[in-house]
Every structure is written in C-alpha cells, then in structure tokens.
Length: 108
Image (cartoon, rainbow, N blue to C red; front, top):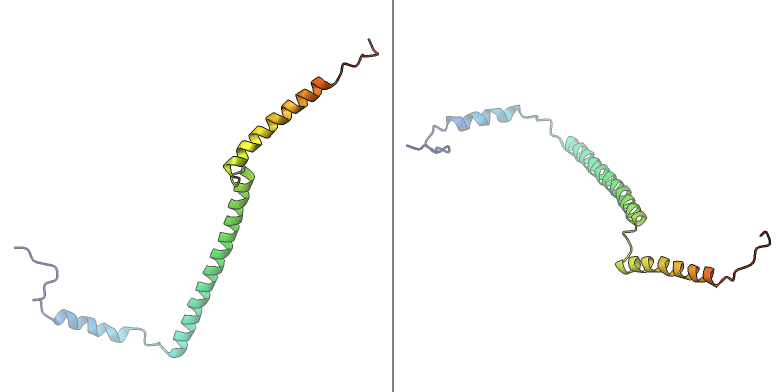
C-alpha cells in the first residue's frame, strides 16, 4: 500500500535531534555585530543602485544617440516630406539650367 512521505506515526525522536544542533549556532550575535552587518548590507544596496542608475543612463543615452543617428525619432510624415523635397529641388535646378540662354563660345 502507498505510504505518504509525511508519516506522522514515526517516533518523535527525530524531532529531538534537531534541538541538539541549536547550541552549535554562532552565538556571537550582539547588537554591535547586527548593526555592523546592517550597515554593510545597506552600503552594498546603495552601491548596486548607483551602478544600476549609471549603467542605465549610459545605455539610455547610447540608445537615444543611435535612434537619432538612424533617423528613427522622426514622425512618418517627416519622412514623406524629406522624400518629396529632393525631387522638387532637382526639378527646380533642371528648370534653371534650361532657363540659362546659350552663350556663344569664343573658342570655336
């Protein structure tokens, strides 16, 4: 038959063995040691927060620079306008070239 792992019918002698090890625990727990340990943990925590903020600032500014350099910070309608403007400038310059009269060359 199936025996569950948490059999409560076992002898309670096993529970008494765990009580014997309580005396071997480091008894050097004074208020000074607790205060020093708390200060150490606080310093570590503050250093981790500072490192995280500095790393986040560097990565964030790098991402902003990259997005700006690749032109991904512009609105879609600005892209359309940028595509139209070079074509219009090209057409204007072609009209200007055609508008210049033929000047006879003196070297012929």
